[in-house]
Image (cartoon, rainbow, N blue to C red; front, side, top):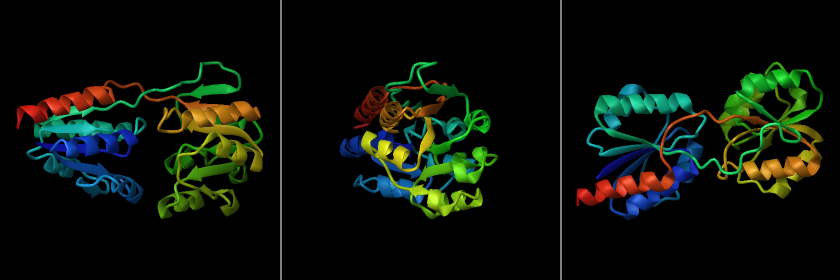
Length: 252
């Protein structure tokens, strides 16, 4: 049985390994070299790297039994295009939802929730202090209206991420190019080292290191600015795995 996984998350890598071990022919699509590097740890799984057009997605889905969308919960445009390609190809589509984990209470002490990066940037314009931006390089343009010297972006150590920082005028001394996961202790040390007053994060759940950032912000008395996760419909990891195993067993 052929399974195509649009990955980029820890859950997608775990699923690909389990399905490959069960005898499925698995192809995982990732958007970047970083994704390829992470996915490369799973033996026996074919990896496709780089963005795909709608036609390319549809062609890749030829003869597939199931397509699993395990992309990042904030990559809503990718999810829409994958779902559309599955409809055209006549392939069963499963959306794998990330476990929400421990979410901050609305109105909690020093915690502010926002619908998106632009709203958070507007809130920050009215306040002074350094900002630890942990939302990824793609969100940087939303904060371009703020003085670049205030922003300390923590991004992947890749050429694309560094270029995104440079394009937004971020001083090189402010760029924190590191690959996670990050512990509470490391988050706390960075907050203190760079005199951070605001930590901006996505609601990435456990795999996104959300709890460690929230605990570090609480320990240091730093404001935690959370970009809400888009609401969507889908299945848990266990339900997706069970569905794939059921199809796999029926085709053996």
